[in-house]
Length: 253
Length: 288
Image (cartoon, rainbow over all chains, first blue to last red; front, side):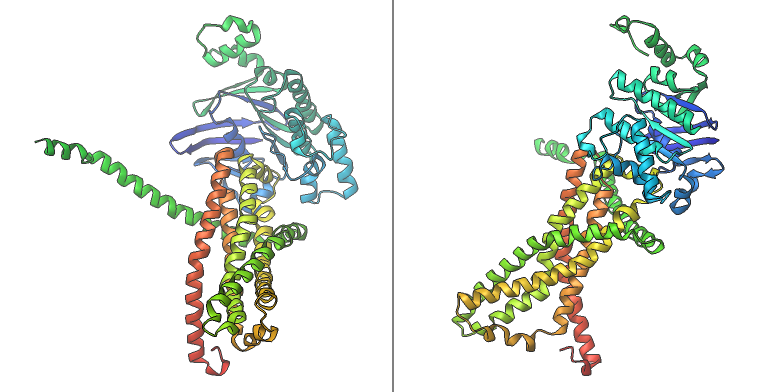
C-alpha cells in the first residue's frame, strides 16, 4: 500500500503540491486526472523517490521513500518502475539493450533468461523484429511501446505511468491501454496512471482521482467519480457523452 | 530648473535601487549555490565510486572515447605547435647565435606549458563539449530520471566512468602531445633548417629535469579533473530543452577554458615556489 500524507512541493514561486493526501491500495489501478501543470508528473516522481518533497511523507509498502536517499532509496524502489511521458529510452542503446537494461544492471537472471524475457516483453508490446533499431528510428507509438517493454520486462510490483497515451493516435492509444490492463493483470501490480485522457482513464482505472489546486480533490470508482459535481468532472463527463461540436463557442470548465 | 528635473529623472527610484541590489545579491547567491552544487557533485561521485566502482566495461568505453578517439586531434595539435615553435625560435634566435637552443626551447615549452594547456583545450572541445551535450540531453529528456527509477545511480553509471577515464587519459594524451611537439620541432629543424640532430637533442638531458615533467603531468592531471568535472556538472544541471543543452555546452567549454588558463598560472607559480622551497630544504635532492 502507498500512503501519501500532507505532501508539499514548491518550484520557485509556484506551489505545486499543497498538502496532498492519497492512499493507493495494493493491486489496484488508480488514475490521476487533472489539468496540465497541476503537478501530476511531479507526484509520480515523488512516489518513486527521485524528487523529494518540501514537507510530507510517502510510505511505499513500509518504506519511507520520501526520506530515503542513496543506496537505501535504490533498494526500496527496486520493485517499482515508471513509464515516462517522452518514453525516456536511452539514445545510445538499441531497443533490445534498452529492454534488457534493468535485468543486466541488477544481474537478475542469466544471459539466456534475459534474452528470453526481452523477446517475450517485445512480443507482448508488438515490437518483435525491432530489437536492433535505435530509438531515433522508432515512431512515437513504438517508442512508448518499447518503453513499456523496458518497464514490464523486470516485472515490477508498482508501475507508474506518466501520460502513457499522450500524443498517440486513438488506435495506438487503445493498444497502450490494453497493454496497461494486461500488464496489471499478469503482474498483479499496483498501477498509478497519470493522464488527461478520460477514455483511457475509464478503460484502465479501478479508481479515478482528480488532482486540483495542489491536492487530490476527489477519489472514487469510475461510476461515482463521473457523478461528482465539479466543473472539471462535469466537462469530462460531457466529453464522453456529447458531440465535441457542441462545445463550440461555449465556455469550458 | 530643467537640469534639476533631468537629474531627478535620471536618478533611479529607491525601489529600483533596492531591486537591482537584490538582483546582485541573488546572482552572488546563485554563484555560491552553484559552487556548492559542483563540489557536492564531485564528492558524491567520489563517494559512490569508492563504495562500489563502476563496471569495467563502462570505464573502457570512456577510455576509448576520451583517449583513443582523441589521439589524432591531439597529435595534430602537438605536432603543428612543435613545428611553429621550432620555426619561430630558429628565426628569432639564429641571428643572435642561439639557434642551438631551439630544441631545448621547444621541449621545455611543450613539456611544461603548451603540451598540458593545448591538450586540455583540445580535449575540452572534442570530449568535454560532447560529454556535456550528451548528459544534458539525457537530463532534459528524462533519461537520467529513467536510470534512477530503475534503481541505477547516475553518478556511478554516467559520471564515475567519465571521471576515472578522463583523469587517467588526459595525462597520457598530454605526454603524447609533448612528444609529438618535440618530434615536429625536430623534423623542421633537421630537414628545413639543416640543424644536426645532436644539436637539437643534446641540451635536453642536461636542462630538461624531472621537475619539468612533474610540472607537465601535475598540470595535465589537474586540467583533466577540471574538464571532466565541469563538463559533467554542466551536463547534469541542464534545464530547458534543446536551447538549454546548447547553453550548457557553451558554458562548459568557456568555463573550462578560463579555468585551465587561470589555474595554469597558479600551478606554474605554486609548483615553482614549491620547487625552490624543496631545493632550499633538501639541497641533496637536486631539485634545481
